[in-house]
Length: 155
Image (cartoon, one colour):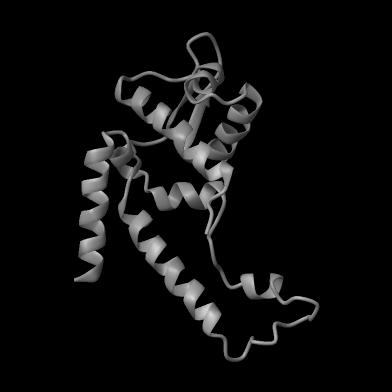
């Protein structure tokens, strides 16, 4: 299972902007690009997607740049992933993976579909509880938070 480069780099760009937000500062495309080792072109594309998705806002001018539309504790990672790339599994999955047939040969009784749905539900549950603010701290803090979220899921 893979997350796309757009999802990975988009979250990394948001972390940079989230840290700047905490300091009441906006970041420009060159600043985000340099901080994450991305080309300015790629950074601009990612920031545009996040702006159109309602997560970022931009201001032109000498003091302009990108900032969050709301506090990082109010932006879930699930929301960010939905804006950046969608879901690992959705109902259209079966239509696009039917091989040479118009309809999947397993469309009536499919244990694989159930597997992908269970995995998607588990991912949704975790990323729905984690916020951008959780990613702004240390890796140890984040690891503790995600382990806590997973333990709550199993109870």
